[in-house]
Image: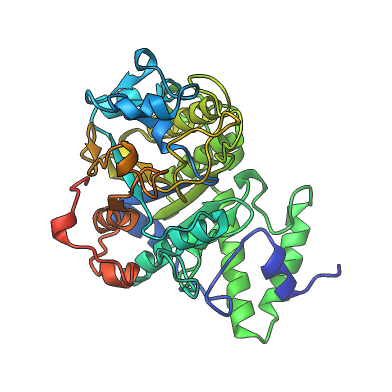
Amino acid sequence: MNLTRRGLLKNGALALVGTSTIPSFLVRSVMAEQAAAQAAGKKLVVVFQRGAADGLNIVVPYQEPNYYALRPTIGIPQKDVLDLDGQFGLHPALKAFQPLYQQGHLAVVHAVGSPDSTRSHFDAQDYMESGTPGLKSTQDGWLNRALQSERLSSASTFRAIALGNAVPRTLQGKVPAVAINNVNDFNVGGRGADPAPVSTAFQRMYAGSTDHVLSGQGTETFEAVRMLKATDPAHYQPANGVVYPNTPFANSMRQVAQLIKANLGVEAAFADIGDWDTHQAQGSTNGRLANRLKEFSEAIAAFWQDMGQDAEHLTLVTMSEFGRTARQNGTGGTDHGHGNVMFVLGGAVRGGHVYGRWPGLANEQLNERRDLAVTTDFRQVLGEIIMRSLGTRDLQTIFPGASLSSAQSLKIV
């Protein structure tokens, strides 16, 4: 077998990312991890909508006279809007969110975004995931820094997880994070391999290493595999008769629920959903955006129901790198904009409200006379959430350079 220890760490089933060298997990026992997980209780799930979702058609300011003037063919008719508070309403494809809002579990933050004005997907995503808008030199992600701020005597291998092939920017940093593409294929041997002899061979290779980092990391990698396999992931059954949509994003949310409920010590989880870049043929009540919103909302609603009583200790937040232009373009779509919308879902969330100062959509109120203006820094929203869900207090360490204060608090949680 033409494999090396370093090659396995780089390309194997676990993606473990640090700031420089691959970090060593804390020494721990499975029982200690489970006890710590039960004691801590709270979980944070981050969902990133990659591609710049159109917040104005997601949560519709249907009482704004200029909304329909700006969007003559793609605007959501008032009769189809799912009313929230007499001023704003959900896109009809988000009907799975309506009961969550009415029950007080789901909150909306509008006119939210980054203070940086870039319209580059790559830069904007990097800034939001690092939590340092306009600064390219940041080495770690905001969520990893939030986890670093906790002073734990022990931590689970599965403390920070991401559904996908690689650890996202949000979770990169000193705290080890695990990327899992499919829990059923989570094995050192890889998909299709006979796990027993392959795993045994690799364990011997790691155990015999004179490199203490590789030897320790290898042991903990196999421990993680054993822990997950012990939960019998292939036979997971969602609770409460929940049926997830048959889509990649829904499958990611299903696996997040599975990993949290397996009591492996998950504290932070990340999933993303792409294809929000609607330059052409965006559609109105039907079409490309509507299809994406249906998948997005039904997957999250299924996840919430699947979590059952555990949902009371959970907070989920959604975000996208920027919004889209207020005025539709010549191809029935929208271009890169600025202000946007975030959803916050959770047991401790003060839902049933649309938060944030609304700047208006009159031409003179638009950012650069083309976009929804940003009145709430996205870091204000995230800061309030991590204070509640992770117990973090030093927000200046998590979001250096941000001017966050209690006076600006939205009091979402």
